[in-house]
Length: 145
Image (cartoon, rainbow, N blue to C red; front, top):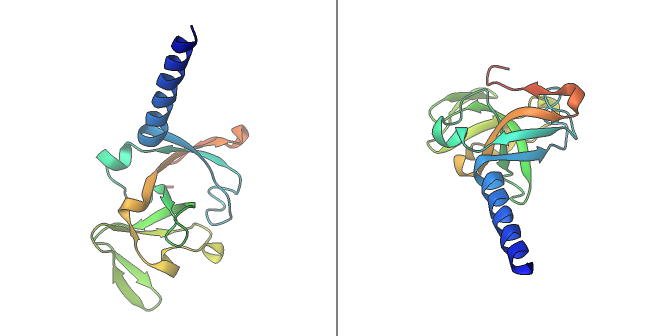
């Protein structure tokens, strides 16, 4: 009896691990960098499948590992994909292969690619699909928002 419970618990744990690591994830967003699109303390659903098969596109909102603090995730909008030109001050910068250009929607209060440059695509965790909390502000995001 105990052994069956342990086996079932391990199987369920493995299933949850696969789902949250490779399919979808729930992310609690903190900080003002994506306001007014995503407010601090909103909870979003992050898709891990689409970036692998469709790829990341300009306009997508993504969850990425922070370039400056690898143990922290950040939520930003993709402003440029490999080969795109980005205006930085009075010059143009080409986004290198294998990188994306990320910016927060709240330009006055966001540390993003304007500070640390292009972000390696390997740091991207997934694409934000929708805001699920608070329920009264449920919203599905597309890359044209």
